[in-house]
Image (tube, rainbow, N blue to C red):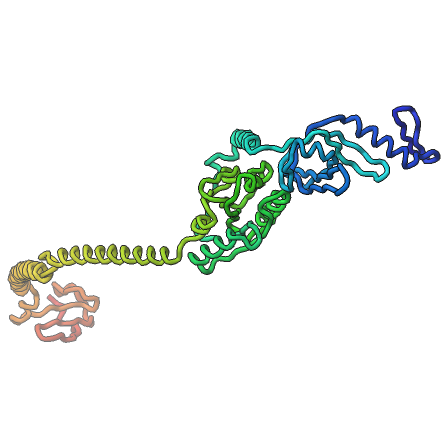
Length: 416
Protein backbone atom coordinates (compact mmCIF):
# COMPACT_ATOMS: atom_id res chain seq x y z
CA UNK A 1 0.00 0.00 0.00
CA UNK A 2 1.40 3.41 -1.02
CA UNK A 3 0.75 6.27 1.40
CA UNK A 4 -0.10 9.71 0.08
CA UNK A 5 2.63 12.23 0.75
CA UNK A 6 2.21 16.01 0.84
CA UNK A 7 5.25 18.29 0.95
CA UNK A 8 5.17 21.93 1.93
CA UNK A 9 7.51 24.63 0.82
CA UNK A 10 9.88 23.96 3.72
CA UNK A 11 10.20 20.33 2.81
CA UNK A 12 8.02 18.91 5.58
CA UNK A 13 5.94 16.04 4.35
CA UNK A 14 2.39 15.12 5.30
CA UNK A 15 1.76 11.39 5.30
CA UNK A 16 -0.80 9.07 6.76
CA UNK A 17 1.71 8.27 9.48
CA UNK A 18 2.65 11.94 10.06
CA UNK A 19 -0.45 14.05 9.27
CA UNK A 20 -0.48 17.81 9.80
CA UNK A 21 -2.49 19.22 12.66
CA UNK A 22 -5.38 21.54 11.88
CA UNK A 23 -3.39 24.54 13.11
CA UNK A 24 -0.63 23.81 10.62
CA UNK A 25 -3.09 23.49 7.75
CA UNK A 26 -4.76 26.75 8.78
CA UNK A 27 -1.40 28.51 8.93
CA UNK A 28 -0.41 27.27 5.49
CA UNK A 29 -3.79 28.29 3.99
CA UNK A 30 -3.35 31.72 5.53
CA UNK A 31 0.14 31.97 4.05
CA UNK A 32 -1.09 31.04 0.57
CA UNK A 33 -3.98 33.51 0.70
CA UNK A 34 -1.68 36.24 2.03
CA UNK A 35 0.41 36.01 -1.13
CA UNK A 36 -2.44 37.65 -3.11
CA UNK A 37 -1.63 40.95 -1.45
CA UNK A 38 -3.64 44.17 -1.68
CA UNK A 39 -6.25 44.31 -4.49
CA UNK A 40 -9.08 46.56 -5.71
CA UNK A 41 -12.54 44.94 -5.67
CA UNK A 42 -15.79 46.14 -7.27
CA UNK A 43 -19.08 44.99 -5.79
CA UNK A 44 -22.49 45.83 -4.42
CA UNK A 45 -23.27 46.16 -0.75
CA UNK A 46 -25.88 43.74 0.52
CA UNK A 47 -25.38 44.27 4.26
CA UNK A 48 -23.73 46.86 6.52
CA UNK A 49 -23.32 46.11 10.23
CA UNK A 50 -22.08 48.79 12.62
CA UNK A 51 -21.87 47.35 16.11
CA UNK A 52 -22.29 49.84 18.95
CA UNK A 53 -19.18 50.41 21.04
CA UNK A 54 -16.76 49.19 18.38
CA UNK A 55 -14.96 50.84 15.48
CA UNK A 56 -15.24 47.78 13.23
CA UNK A 57 -17.76 47.78 10.35
CA UNK A 58 -18.80 44.51 8.72
CA UNK A 59 -19.84 44.70 5.07
CA UNK A 60 -21.15 41.94 2.84
CA UNK A 61 -19.98 42.62 -0.72
CA UNK A 62 -21.73 40.83 -3.55
CA UNK A 63 -20.94 40.37 -7.23
CA UNK A 64 -23.57 42.32 -9.24
CA UNK A 65 -23.84 39.59 -11.89
CA UNK A 66 -23.45 36.37 -9.92
CA UNK A 67 -24.65 34.83 -6.70
CA UNK A 68 -21.28 35.23 -4.96
CA UNK A 69 -20.37 37.34 -1.93
CA UNK A 70 -17.46 38.07 0.40
CA UNK A 71 -17.21 39.57 3.87
CA UNK A 72 -15.33 42.81 4.28
CA UNK A 73 -14.17 44.24 7.61
CA UNK A 74 -12.88 47.77 7.96
CA UNK A 75 -12.59 50.64 10.38
CA UNK A 76 -15.47 53.05 10.91
CA UNK A 77 -13.20 55.94 9.96
CA UNK A 78 -12.48 54.33 6.58
CA UNK A 79 -16.23 54.09 5.86
CA UNK A 80 -16.95 57.63 7.06
CA UNK A 81 -14.13 59.00 4.92
CA UNK A 82 -14.82 57.16 1.64
CA UNK A 83 -18.55 56.38 1.78
CA UNK A 84 -20.28 58.31 4.59
CA UNK A 85 -23.76 57.47 3.24
CA UNK A 86 -23.02 53.81 2.67
CA UNK A 87 -26.20 51.71 2.62
CA UNK A 88 -27.43 48.43 1.25
CA UNK A 89 -27.55 48.35 -2.53
CA UNK A 90 -24.72 50.86 -3.00
CA UNK A 91 -21.97 50.17 -5.51
CA UNK A 92 -18.46 50.52 -4.04
CA UNK A 93 -14.81 49.93 -4.87
CA UNK A 94 -12.74 48.49 -2.01
CA UNK A 95 -8.98 48.35 -1.56
CA UNK A 96 -8.48 45.28 0.58
CA UNK A 97 -6.32 42.30 1.36
CA UNK A 98 -7.74 38.78 1.79
CA UNK A 99 -7.21 37.25 5.23
CA UNK A 100 -7.86 33.76 6.49
CA UNK A 101 -8.92 33.53 10.11
CA UNK A 102 -7.46 30.28 11.36
CA UNK A 103 -9.53 30.21 14.52
CA UNK A 104 -12.83 30.22 12.60
CA UNK A 105 -11.60 28.78 9.33
CA UNK A 106 -13.17 31.68 7.42
CA UNK A 107 -12.05 34.06 4.70
CA UNK A 108 -12.65 37.80 4.70
CA UNK A 109 -11.24 40.99 3.24
CA UNK A 110 -9.51 43.64 5.34
CA UNK A 111 -10.17 47.03 3.69
CA UNK A 112 -8.17 50.19 4.21
CA UNK A 113 -9.97 52.30 1.59
CA UNK A 114 -13.54 52.42 0.32
CA UNK A 115 -14.85 54.51 -2.58
CA UNK A 116 -18.52 54.78 -3.35
CA UNK A 117 -19.14 54.68 -7.09
CA UNK A 118 -20.89 57.84 -8.24
CA UNK A 119 -23.56 58.16 -10.90
CA UNK A 120 -21.11 59.54 -13.45
CA UNK A 121 -18.76 56.61 -13.00
CA UNK A 122 -21.66 54.15 -13.20
CA UNK A 123 -22.81 55.70 -16.46
CA UNK A 124 -19.28 55.54 -17.81
CA UNK A 125 -19.07 51.84 -16.96
CA UNK A 126 -22.44 51.23 -18.58
CA UNK A 127 -21.22 52.98 -21.71
CA UNK A 128 -18.21 50.67 -21.82
CA UNK A 129 -20.43 47.62 -21.45
CA UNK A 130 -22.75 49.00 -24.15
CA UNK A 131 -19.89 49.40 -26.62
CA UNK A 132 -18.67 45.89 -25.82
CA UNK A 133 -22.08 44.28 -26.37
CA UNK A 134 -22.66 46.28 -29.53
CA UNK A 135 -19.31 45.20 -30.94
CA UNK A 136 -20.23 41.57 -30.29
CA UNK A 137 -23.47 41.96 -32.27
CA UNK A 138 -25.95 41.69 -29.39
CA UNK A 139 -27.76 44.83 -30.61
CA UNK A 140 -27.89 43.78 -34.29
CA UNK A 141 -31.26 44.47 -35.86
CA UNK A 142 -31.11 41.44 -38.17
CA UNK A 143 -31.07 39.01 -35.22
CA UNK A 144 -34.24 40.41 -33.64
CA UNK A 145 -37.26 38.14 -34.03
CA UNK A 146 -40.83 39.07 -34.87
CA UNK A 147 -43.44 38.55 -32.20
CA UNK A 148 -46.20 36.03 -32.97
CA UNK A 149 -49.53 37.59 -33.98
CA UNK A 150 -51.41 35.86 -31.16
CA UNK A 151 -49.23 34.03 -28.60
CA UNK A 152 -50.63 30.95 -26.92
CA UNK A 153 -49.07 31.91 -23.58
CA UNK A 154 -47.02 34.85 -22.37
CA UNK A 155 -44.28 34.67 -19.75
CA UNK A 156 -44.02 37.72 -17.48
CA UNK A 157 -41.01 38.50 -15.27
CA UNK A 158 -41.76 41.37 -12.91
CA UNK A 159 -41.85 42.46 -9.28
CA UNK A 160 -44.36 40.98 -6.89
CA UNK A 161 -47.69 42.90 -6.74
CA UNK A 162 -46.10 45.70 -8.76
CA UNK A 163 -47.83 48.33 -10.85
CA UNK A 164 -45.95 46.98 -13.87
CA UNK A 165 -47.47 43.52 -13.39
CA UNK A 166 -50.95 45.01 -13.01
CA UNK A 167 -50.53 47.21 -16.10
CA UNK A 168 -49.38 44.32 -18.31
CA UNK A 169 -52.04 41.84 -17.16
CA UNK A 170 -54.92 44.32 -17.11
CA UNK A 171 -54.23 45.93 -20.47
CA UNK A 172 -53.40 42.65 -22.22
CA UNK A 173 -56.60 40.98 -20.99
CA UNK A 174 -58.61 44.07 -21.87
CA UNK A 175 -57.33 43.78 -25.42
CA UNK A 176 -57.60 39.97 -25.67
CA UNK A 177 -59.54 38.41 -22.76
CA UNK A 178 -58.46 34.83 -23.50
CA UNK A 179 -54.71 35.49 -23.24
CA UNK A 180 -52.89 33.22 -20.78
CA UNK A 181 -49.96 34.35 -18.61
CA UNK A 182 -47.28 32.60 -16.61
CA UNK A 183 -46.01 35.15 -14.10
CA UNK A 184 -42.73 34.80 -12.19
CA UNK A 185 -42.18 37.42 -9.50
CA UNK A 186 -38.59 38.46 -8.84
CA UNK A 187 -36.65 41.25 -7.21
CA UNK A 188 -36.34 44.08 -9.75
CA UNK A 189 -33.70 46.08 -7.90
CA UNK A 190 -30.99 45.40 -5.39
CA UNK A 191 -28.20 42.83 -5.30
CA UNK A 192 -30.44 39.77 -5.78
CA UNK A 193 -32.30 41.14 -8.82
CA UNK A 194 -29.98 39.95 -11.60
CA UNK A 195 -29.70 36.27 -10.53
CA UNK A 196 -33.45 36.01 -9.94
CA UNK A 197 -34.29 37.58 -13.30
CA UNK A 198 -31.82 35.30 -15.12
CA UNK A 199 -33.28 32.23 -13.40
CA UNK A 200 -36.81 33.31 -14.34
CA UNK A 201 -35.74 33.85 -17.96
CA UNK A 202 -34.23 30.38 -18.14
CA UNK A 203 -37.39 28.79 -16.67
CA UNK A 204 -39.68 30.54 -19.14
CA UNK A 205 -37.37 29.91 -22.09
CA UNK A 206 -37.45 26.16 -21.39
CA UNK A 207 -41.25 26.19 -21.22
CA UNK A 208 -42.48 25.06 -24.67
CA UNK A 209 -45.90 26.66 -24.12
CA UNK A 210 -44.41 30.16 -23.81
CA UNK A 211 -44.35 32.14 -27.07
CA UNK A 212 -43.26 35.54 -25.71
CA UNK A 213 -41.36 36.65 -22.58
CA UNK A 214 -41.92 40.13 -21.11
CA UNK A 215 -39.51 41.84 -18.71
CA UNK A 216 -41.51 44.54 -16.94
CA UNK A 217 -40.62 47.11 -14.31
CA UNK A 218 -41.94 50.53 -13.41
CA UNK A 219 -39.95 53.73 -13.44
CA UNK A 220 -37.12 54.58 -11.08
CA UNK A 221 -33.76 56.21 -10.75
CA UNK A 222 -30.72 55.20 -12.71
CA UNK A 223 -29.46 53.26 -9.70
CA UNK A 224 -32.79 51.43 -9.38
CA UNK A 225 -32.65 50.34 -13.02
CA UNK A 226 -29.01 49.20 -12.91
CA UNK A 227 -29.87 45.46 -12.80
CA UNK A 228 -31.41 45.77 -16.27
CA UNK A 229 -28.10 47.08 -17.65
CA UNK A 230 -26.13 44.20 -16.19
CA UNK A 231 -23.92 42.41 -18.73
CA UNK A 232 -24.89 38.93 -17.52
CA UNK A 233 -28.59 39.73 -17.84
CA UNK A 234 -28.09 41.16 -21.34
CA UNK A 235 -26.30 37.99 -22.42
CA UNK A 236 -29.05 35.84 -20.90
CA UNK A 237 -31.67 37.75 -22.90
CA UNK A 238 -29.59 37.36 -26.06
CA UNK A 239 -29.34 33.59 -25.48
CA UNK A 240 -33.12 33.12 -25.15
CA UNK A 241 -34.78 31.14 -27.94
CA UNK A 242 -38.12 32.78 -27.13
CA UNK A 243 -38.70 36.40 -28.27
CA UNK A 244 -38.20 38.85 -25.39
CA UNK A 245 -40.00 42.17 -24.89
CA UNK A 246 -38.31 44.74 -22.64
CA UNK A 247 -40.67 47.09 -20.78
CA UNK A 248 -38.42 48.78 -18.24
CA UNK A 249 -39.26 52.16 -16.74
CA UNK A 250 -40.68 54.99 -18.80
CA UNK A 251 -40.00 56.38 -22.27
CA UNK A 252 -36.77 58.29 -21.35
CA UNK A 253 -35.29 55.26 -19.57
CA UNK A 254 -32.98 53.15 -21.74
CA UNK A 255 -31.31 50.28 -19.86
CA UNK A 256 -29.02 48.07 -21.93
CA UNK A 257 -31.51 45.19 -21.97
CA UNK A 258 -33.71 47.39 -24.20
CA UNK A 259 -31.08 47.19 -26.94
CA UNK A 260 -30.67 43.42 -26.64
CA UNK A 261 -34.37 42.49 -26.45
CA UNK A 262 -36.25 41.66 -29.63
CA UNK A 263 -38.83 44.38 -28.97
CA UNK A 264 -38.49 47.47 -26.78
CA UNK A 265 -41.68 48.80 -25.19
CA UNK A 266 -41.70 52.29 -23.73
CA UNK A 267 -43.82 51.25 -20.72
CA UNK A 268 -45.44 48.07 -19.36
CA UNK A 269 -48.74 49.29 -20.81
CA UNK A 270 -47.09 49.63 -24.22
CA UNK A 271 -45.77 46.06 -23.85
CA UNK A 272 -49.33 44.79 -23.35
CA UNK A 273 -50.33 46.51 -26.60
CA UNK A 274 -47.43 44.94 -28.47
CA UNK A 275 -47.78 41.31 -27.39
CA UNK A 276 -51.49 40.81 -28.15
CA UNK A 277 -53.83 42.32 -30.75
CA UNK A 278 -56.92 44.28 -29.76
CA UNK A 279 -60.02 42.09 -30.06
CA UNK A 280 -62.25 45.02 -30.98
CA UNK A 281 -59.83 46.18 -33.68
CA UNK A 282 -59.56 42.67 -35.08
CA UNK A 283 -63.35 42.26 -35.17
CA UNK A 284 -63.61 45.62 -36.95
CA UNK A 285 -60.88 44.64 -39.40
CA UNK A 286 -62.62 41.34 -40.07
CA UNK A 287 -65.85 43.23 -40.73
CA UNK A 288 -64.07 45.58 -43.13
CA UNK A 289 -62.39 42.67 -44.87
CA UNK A 290 -65.77 40.94 -45.16
CA UNK A 291 -67.26 44.07 -46.71
CA UNK A 292 -64.40 44.32 -49.20
CA UNK A 293 -64.81 40.65 -50.01
CA UNK A 294 -68.55 41.10 -50.52
CA UNK A 295 -67.99 44.08 -52.81
CA UNK A 296 -65.33 42.22 -54.75
CA UNK A 297 -67.55 39.16 -55.10
CA UNK A 298 -70.54 41.23 -56.18
CA UNK A 299 -68.38 43.06 -58.71
CA UNK A 300 -67.12 39.74 -60.07
CA UNK A 301 -70.66 38.37 -60.32
CA UNK A 302 -71.85 41.56 -62.07
CA UNK A 303 -69.01 41.40 -64.59
CA UNK A 304 -69.69 37.75 -65.31
CA UNK A 305 -73.43 38.47 -65.65
CA UNK A 306 -72.66 41.21 -68.20
CA UNK A 307 -70.46 38.79 -70.09
CA UNK A 308 -73.24 36.19 -70.10
CA UNK A 309 -75.76 38.79 -71.26
CA UNK A 310 -73.43 39.85 -74.06
CA UNK A 311 -72.94 36.25 -75.12
CA UNK A 312 -76.66 35.55 -75.00
CA UNK A 313 -77.37 38.63 -77.16
CA UNK A 314 -75.32 37.24 -80.04
CA UNK A 315 -77.52 35.94 -82.94
CA UNK A 316 -76.07 32.47 -82.74
CA UNK A 317 -77.08 32.22 -79.08
CA UNK A 318 -80.21 34.38 -79.09
CA UNK A 319 -81.76 32.58 -82.14
CA UNK A 320 -79.95 29.27 -82.44
CA UNK A 321 -82.74 27.69 -84.61
CA UNK A 322 -81.99 30.16 -87.42
CA UNK A 323 -78.79 28.37 -88.22
CA UNK A 324 -80.58 25.01 -87.93
CA UNK A 325 -83.32 26.21 -90.29
CA UNK A 326 -80.77 27.35 -92.85
CA UNK A 327 -78.95 24.06 -92.65
CA UNK A 328 -82.23 22.17 -92.80
CA UNK A 329 -83.13 23.91 -96.08
CA UNK A 330 -79.70 23.10 -97.47
CA UNK A 331 -80.07 19.47 -96.45
CA UNK A 332 -83.57 19.29 -97.99
CA UNK A 333 -82.30 20.74 -101.29
CA UNK A 334 -79.42 18.28 -101.36
CA UNK A 335 -81.79 15.41 -100.58
CA UNK A 336 -84.15 16.55 -103.37
CA UNK A 337 -81.30 16.73 -105.87
CA UNK A 338 -80.13 13.31 -104.77
CA UNK A 339 -83.68 11.91 -105.07
CA UNK A 340 -84.15 13.34 -108.60
CA UNK A 341 -80.75 12.16 -109.69
CA UNK A 342 -81.48 8.66 -108.33
CA UNK A 343 -84.89 8.52 -109.97
CA UNK A 344 -83.43 9.69 -113.26
CA UNK A 345 -80.81 6.99 -113.11
CA UNK A 346 -83.39 4.40 -112.15
CA UNK A 347 -85.60 5.43 -115.10
CA UNK A 348 -82.71 5.18 -117.49
CA UNK A 349 -81.70 1.83 -116.06
CA UNK A 350 -85.32 0.59 -116.28
CA UNK A 351 -85.59 1.61 -119.92
CA UNK A 352 -82.30 -0.07 -120.73
CA UNK A 353 -83.46 -3.19 -118.89
CA UNK A 354 -86.70 -3.28 -120.86
CA UNK A 355 -84.78 -3.01 -124.12
CA UNK A 356 -82.48 -5.81 -123.00
CA UNK A 357 -85.47 -7.99 -121.99
CA UNK A 358 -87.08 -7.36 -125.35
CA UNK A 359 -83.95 -8.44 -127.12
CA UNK A 360 -83.66 -11.48 -124.87
CA UNK A 361 -87.21 -12.45 -125.52
CA UNK A 362 -86.65 -12.07 -129.23
CA UNK A 363 -83.56 -14.22 -129.13
CA UNK A 364 -84.77 -16.63 -126.44
CA UNK A 365 -85.52 -20.28 -127.49
CA UNK A 366 -88.71 -20.00 -125.55
CA UNK A 367 -90.10 -17.55 -128.08
CA UNK A 368 -89.32 -20.07 -130.81
CA UNK A 369 -91.05 -22.79 -128.82
CA UNK A 370 -94.14 -20.60 -128.49
CA UNK A 371 -94.36 -20.56 -132.24
CA UNK A 372 -94.78 -24.39 -132.23
CA UNK A 373 -91.24 -25.61 -132.21
CA UNK A 374 -89.81 -28.15 -129.74
CA UNK A 375 -86.37 -29.05 -128.37
CA UNK A 376 -85.38 -32.68 -128.14
CA UNK A 377 -82.78 -33.50 -125.51
CA UNK A 378 -81.11 -36.68 -124.50
CA UNK A 379 -81.04 -37.88 -120.96
CA UNK A 380 -77.78 -36.06 -120.35
CA UNK A 381 -79.27 -32.77 -121.57
CA UNK A 382 -77.56 -32.77 -124.96
CA UNK A 383 -79.70 -31.37 -127.78
CA UNK A 384 -80.51 -33.85 -130.55
CA UNK A 385 -79.77 -32.25 -133.84
CA UNK A 386 -79.89 -35.22 -136.24
CA UNK A 387 -81.57 -38.66 -136.23
CA UNK A 388 -78.23 -40.38 -136.08
CA UNK A 389 -77.50 -38.68 -132.77
CA UNK A 390 -79.87 -41.15 -130.99
CA UNK A 391 -80.19 -44.87 -130.86
CA UNK A 392 -83.28 -47.08 -130.96
CA UNK A 393 -84.86 -47.38 -127.52
CA UNK A 394 -83.08 -44.32 -126.10
CA UNK A 395 -85.24 -42.15 -123.89
CA UNK A 396 -85.55 -38.54 -124.87
CA UNK A 397 -87.08 -35.42 -123.37
CA UNK A 398 -89.06 -33.14 -125.59
CA UNK A 399 -89.28 -29.58 -124.33
CA UNK A 400 -92.30 -27.60 -125.44
CA UNK A 401 -93.32 -24.00 -124.75
CA UNK A 402 -95.64 -25.02 -121.91
CA UNK A 403 -93.89 -28.14 -120.57
CA UNK A 404 -91.91 -31.28 -121.40
CA UNK A 405 -92.73 -34.71 -122.80
CA UNK A 406 -90.90 -38.02 -122.43
CA UNK A 407 -90.37 -40.16 -125.55
CA UNK A 408 -88.64 -43.35 -126.56
CA UNK A 409 -86.92 -43.75 -129.92
CA UNK A 410 -88.58 -46.59 -131.92
CA UNK A 411 -86.40 -48.78 -134.08
CA UNK A 412 -87.96 -47.78 -137.33
CA UNK A 413 -87.80 -44.04 -136.52
CA UNK A 414 -84.03 -44.00 -136.69
CA UNK A 415 -83.95 -44.87 -140.36
CA UNK A 416 -83.20 -42.02 -142.78
